[in-house]
Length: 266
Length: 216
Image (cartoon, rainbow over all chains, first blue to last red; front, side, top):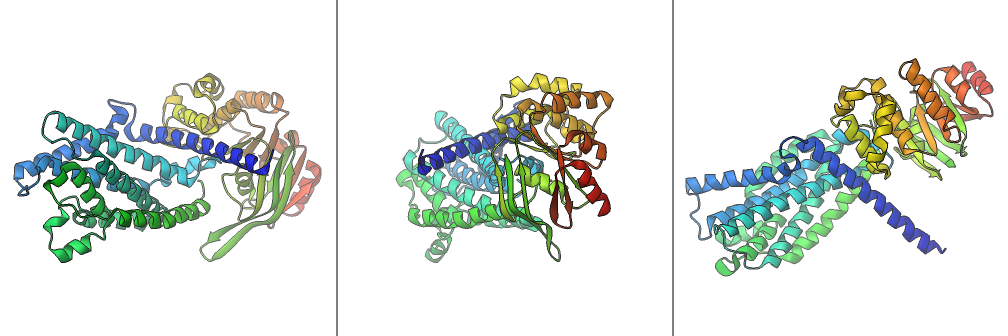
């Protein structure tokens, strides 16, 4: 057997082990977070669904929708993006501590703890967005999307950005507790800038330029273009988001690696 | 076979670096039973965790050519909010064993009864150790790493451990840390002493104890 073949087999074996470990961790997260009582793991997407519905009701009741766009679709798409990045990043802020004891098992590594939570949160946010939009389209509260592919691309780019940020914030929080607290405050402050509550086109030109530096704004614009089509004029730069996502991945992975060698089991 | 090659372990502490041990070499053959002696803080548990792979060496390499258990110790290895049963399932999935096949043996061996459905954080340390033993026996390893937990449980449980671990599985390798000399004398072929950052190997347990007593 040549060295290359053994190496590839070793890699496939390692991949299988990692998939097994992450699968086990996902089940473990589901059990402690949602329990086996009542609807169990369905809370994963029911929770964001209730949240979105509540905000939707509030906005509609208050009449805060002096906009040219359909309010339900606008709000739903905005909150779906917020939930995607916020939940994914927030859940990684405290990924290590409750699972520290599990690091006694050789194949359970820090990165698996993050991976399990990231997969779970992205899945939850995606399912809830999918279910709600399907429901609203079915009952006629939302027009069917103009370009599904654009929406998928936007969702993918935003999930990727959330993953990068989750790795960075997650590992920094594992190294210092204050990071998690600062992040919580920062994420609130960032909320109005995230692109969920406005279209770039509504802003004055100088603000447009500034706000397009924010990756989530680009993603939200693209998502809404896919949703509304030509009703609105969207501003975004896919290449920029891909570049930022690629660049953020590096510190994310390096930090996780650093945490892996510096945080010990119980 | 497990091999430690020039292994050094250091921890970062508030004022600099603490070296637990330096350039340790050790080979554990299949079926071999090795005791590790050393005073409190000499690095016995660290050694066990390095052997298991739960911790990585600062320098040097740990090579494992057989399946090695996680450190069977009083703390750890279980997620506190999960029930005993869910922890068993988790560990089975991680090691690639079918939980359903393992459960009856674990239930029978751990003797936790209905507590198996309670969160592990409500367990006493003895209960945890019993559960840990039960799972590790159910999964089957070539080498068991045992950190201070042989004397767990009552006489009957002791008896069971004796039968399952040291009789039925006497072909397996074991690395045992214990403060109780009789445990090591009874079960180990040879012993090493961790002293002042170095691992001193001895061909038999008695010479190891002579050295240990001289240096403590």
